[in-house]
Amino acid sequence: MTKQKTYAMEELYPVWTKLAGKYAGADSTSLPWEKAQMLMGAVLYCLQESGMYPGAIVSAGGSVSLQERYETGRRLVREKAEGLRDLYHELLAGFQDYGVLCLREVVTEGLPAFFLQYDMEFEPQHTILTLDYPLLYGLPDGSGVDAVWEYTKGIFMEQQFLKGFDTGYILAVLGAYSSEYELLAENICGIVIPCLAGHLLLKKPLQEKLSPKDRRHLATLLRGYAPADLSAILEKMLDGLCRERYPDPEEPGAYLKSCISDISVRIRGCVENDCMERVFLV
Image (cartoon, rainbow, N blue to C red; front, side, top):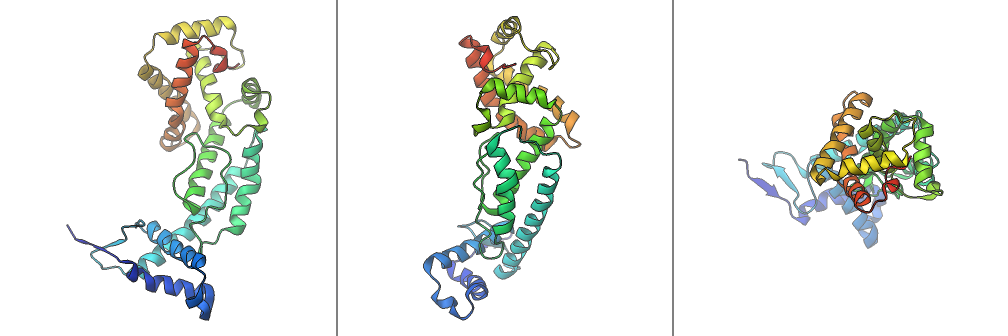
């Protein structure tokens, strides 16, 4: 195995100096501390993009210079930002916020602001976007274009999933969840998926609302499942739905199934506390 070389901070300095020269010209030696830190963050971010990571900046056998790795990372940041713009335009085609204000604002205001303000050369590590609408698994790791890419991709996969159902059904579920659902910072799929599970378990069309008898039947049925069995049933359900909606269902399926554990716990709690209407809403 080729021994990897670890770079010291003084070896990063020439890369930083070149970037600082672009940023401040002849005054690069008198940069404020905050700006110097920002530019070092930009260097580290681009190195990370090229396969490096902060705190352990290495090269394979030293055959590629640190400057070359930085330039490679900078190119990858630019390409990812361009790809993000394409993904955003695809997201906008047929986008529905279902009345959820934080989703509407992040897609129609936050993302355009990101494209206008993102500085891929001097501050690529800055996320800019506040990511107010939560994804199914919370917020993406990382920062800058990496975080915004994962965030936008999550919203895009959710939109593709929700488009497979009648808009009236989605709105009915959200309205039953809260009379002020428009103001909630909650994930739409995390609310809708348990309701879908109820209908699918009973083999009941979505157009037909669940009755109190249906919910009692579900409670009886679900009491017989161990938590792991319930999770497996929900995963199988989502796998089937994803095969219907995506040409390549693996990634969106993995994303949507990231909520399974939480939903299983919620369903079990409602079964045990006899409040099935809180999770099987319509």
